[in-house]
Image 1 (cartoon, one colour):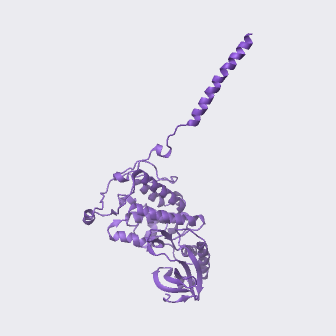
Image 2 (image 1 turned 90 degrees about the horizontal axis):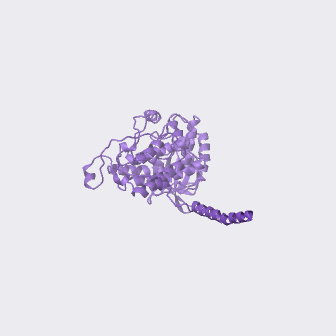
Image 3 (image 1 turned 90 degrees about the vertical axis):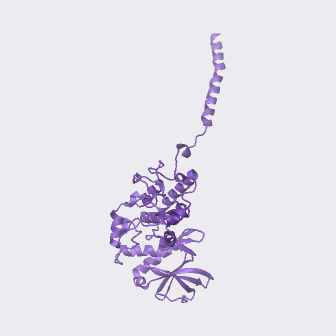
Length: 383
């Protein structure tokens, strides 16, 4: 571990350690050259002992540095000071998404659906931008999603996660890379991650935000991997009956076992969820603007937070070719404030076809104009 107050390359002063993980230590730092506060990740020495990994890390970090999007953490610099390899990023003041979910859990409630949609849409937008640049994150999880005080999302750790994934594929690391609770079935099988792998992780995150729990629980990483591979995920409404059927449909599609059955990229997920949210607001107003109690707690009832009873429902899983939530009536009872009604007139409003009417009138005038000509021809022929 690097000590605080160390200055890397005579420029970056490490002020305080603000986080740590399996890949790096994170420090709030001062950039003496530009006079600004930055965040610096110093890789663990166990990773830097592999020359192949360092080469891949530098290549992927440079690619991540070229990503310029409001929902992606900006990479300022990559450097080396002796055996210390580090990456300099913008300093994001706020919380991780994991911390926010835990705060709701400590209160005995789940995140409001509107807030969950806003955060996952922003995350998907940033991730979709990376997918269009042919970059796959490989380790999307709420710990890597930073949320500012004004609720702006920043996706972090592109370069490190991708380099680790490549090292795993080439056999230089003796374990499957990724976080077992969030990685996709193909990652559990040791296959190459694709944009659809990131999409699956988005589904796990959205499920967790809506329900306060993960779709799968297991006592070991191996058991967790097997569940991702073979166990059908539960519906979010099983644990939070306030989740509308259409949103259930979307989450279920995100968690499909086959990559081809999911949405193709995070950008598509962002568009689908934005359309769903906008349509819901148009038809019914805000969705679940208060946190939903996940268990029947007397305290929550007294404070006015709604408690929903579990209801029997019928639900049909989406087909692989279904790219959007079906505009049908929900198969289970929903609170009146959340029922979505779709009408044909909403998508194709009726209007008067003035072009057709005008052409009809013109044809009639032309026909009437031929009558004098016929009379003249008849008179001439008669004489």
